[in-house]
Amino acid sequence: MPEWMSLLAWGDSGWGDEMVRGAGWTLLVAVIAFALGIVLGTGGAAVKLSRVPLVPLLGDVYTTLVRGIPDLITIYIIFFGGGQAVMAVAKLFGYNGYIEFNALTTGVLALGFISGAYSTEVIRGAVLAVPKGQIEAAKACGMSRWVMFRRILVPQVARYALPGLGNVWQLTLKDTSLISVVGLTEIMRQAFVASGSTKQPIVFFMSAAVLYLALTSLSNKVFGRAEAFANRGVRRA
Amino acid sequence: MIKLFDQPDNTWELIANGLPWTLTLAGSSLALGFFLAIGLALVRLSPYRPLQALAYAYVYLFRSTPLLVQIFLIYYGLGQFEAVQQSFLWPLLREAHWCAILALTLNTTAYTAEIIRGGLLAVPWGQVEAAKACGMSTWLRFRRVIFPQAIRQALPGYGNEIVLMIKSTSLASTITILDMTLIARKETSATFSIEPLFIAAAFYLVINFVATRGVMWLEYRLSPDLREAKTGRTLPDQDVANAH
Image (cartoon, rainbow over all chains, first blue to last red; front, side, top):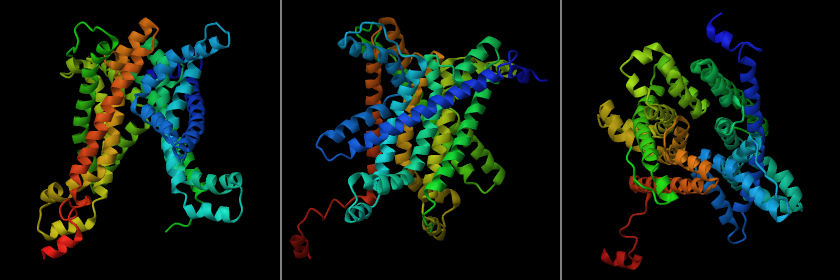
């Protein structure tokens, strides 16, 4: 058995199971952060499309700041400053204890915050892509705002937004590697620890690359399926 | 690397000392990557199947894995090979900043190649036919007709890539490069204040703002055909009619 295979063996003798568990953490952080990002993105799109004066400006500030600052800095700010901010709020309610975000919370909050900014732009574009006539027709049918939102807007926005959200997902998935700097044992952290203790960086960073490749390729397929499903009623030229 | 402030008086000056690294990393990898990307895009569009596949594999691999993996593979991984340690490249590759530039360049090449490929594909075929009809050689056709239009088409996408690369240079801080990110992080760890991180963020925002404005200006300069003509329009219609 070649050396690299025994290094990646399953169980106590090798790092195979640890690496795969790392991939599990990567996937978990990415999924929660992406979901959080869609929630923030929907809110952000609503804010940016608001007709109330000055409100869209808030959305602009959010997307411009997050997309103009390196993700690593955003992560550090939330890692070092998140606990402080929560402590300051807790103090107002009379709680003086020490609060610190753990690695998972930091990762999910930071990546959710970042992907939310990108999702905002994607969802905003998708909402604008829904033809005006659809809304007018819904109103003419006497739909309430909620029914119109649920039956007319959401299905069409989802269709237009899917390709863009697929990109945001890929971005979020790859960004999870940055969370290793705050100590979450996802793929990158695990590979770093393993290569440090075995002095075999090529083996472990290569297997990290392969794991990321597998995750991105598989999720690409899932998004392809989802797009096909969302477009099932659309006639192609 | 040059130091802007020998004895930094405040946090702003301290962070500013990392600015040369950020600009050097972004500038050199973008410049190198741009030329490599033109080559890669042309290979990707070449009629030779094996070459096409090779170029596609390169693009696919670099775009599907995080930049951090690529940086670590080059910085920690390359030294593991005897051959690399014996080669003439070793004095370069054992330096963290050359590893960072190499990783950033290889990464941006993959993304930029796709942007340029999109630009090349967007040039209308009629333009190529017209150039052929004028008797232009392949090289002349590329230089005078295809490439200028492709670059114009690719510019908005390339502007995004520039911003992404400026942001990506912050990852070099993970392999000991003292750029703005690492200085800010160290200062934050030392003082328990997140002010340095906000200052670094402000620096990045300003650089990105300037970069996007630059690209917008270039886009404006390169598309005179899409602008309204400056002369004639300012005259009232009456005067134009009278002039004839």
